[in-house]
Image: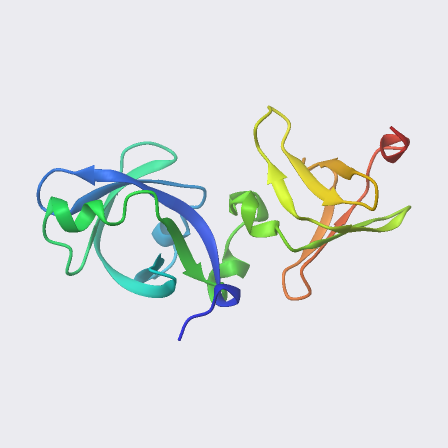
Length: 172
């Protein structure tokens, strides 16, 4: 059985396309085009299920159309609407950190080079132009910019993000 700890997100199904089971999708990584990846994983009724990729084609730099084996009509394709596309973590080393969906980092510990451990990321706020890691504190919450210029290293196994934040940022 596949567990959430065994996969990472790379995209989302947008909507059915046509009547033959094809689906429109958006992605943060085109790893499936660079590596031999036979299947995507989807969460269906609380269970992670692999679906083999029959074919795909790109529509733009972050969108495409896909056909999964066994999905033969619009009604079946509609059941995938809004689902996150996952890949097994064995492909994680082939993906740039900037290609991973930011919600993947919920649960990671953020460690600053100067201040040490800042806490565990509880959510990623993507409602503004500057994406923020949200870390709950006793009295409030820390809002830490998720810019790649601050991230020094990501340890996926230990779920730690090492950052070097600008001086004074934590004093605000």
